[in-house]
Amino acid sequence: MTSLITSGSLINTTIFSEVGGYNEKLFIDEVDHEYCYRIKMLGYSVLQVENIFLNHTLGSQQPVKTLTGKKKVKTLHSPIRLYYIVRNCCFIIKMYKKQFPEEIKLRRKDLAVRIKNNLLYGPKKFSLIKHILLGFVHFKRKRFGKL
Image (tube, rainbow, N blue to C red; front, side, top):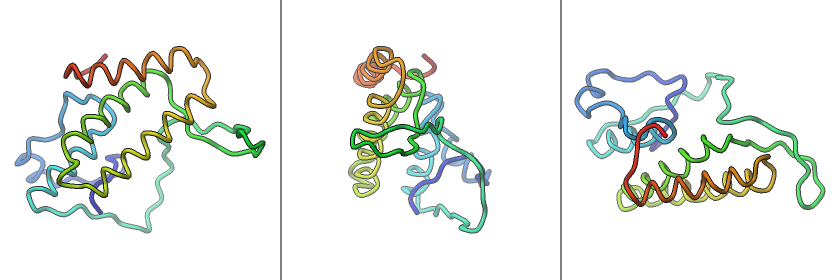
C-alpha cells in the first residue's frame, strides 16, 4: 500500500512531526496521498486494516444513464471541489512520478475518470469546465491554498 485517504486514519504523531505534517498549501484533496508519499520516501510504511467499514464517499453518488443507455451510479463533484482535485492531482503527478510511477499512473487514470464523469453527467457544465481549467492554470502558476 502506497497511500490512503485520511478519513478514518490513525497517524503516528512522531512521524507526523518528523515529516512536517500535511502540506497545507494543497488545502484539500490529495493532502493525504502527498503525506503518504513523503513518509514512504523516508522508509516508513502505510498500513491498511482490511476488515473495518467506513461509510464515506468522495463526492455525491448520483444515478445516471450512460451513453450506452445503462443505469449506473457515478461519483460527481461540485465545480470548486473539482478545481482542487485537478490542481492538486497535477501537483502530485509532477512531484512523485519518478518515485511512484505505478501509483501515479493510477492517479492520472482516476483524474481522467473524474473529469469525464463530471463533464458527462454533472450539472453546471460551464462552471465545471471553468474550474477544471482554472485548477490546471493555478497548478502551472504555482498558486496554491484556498481558492
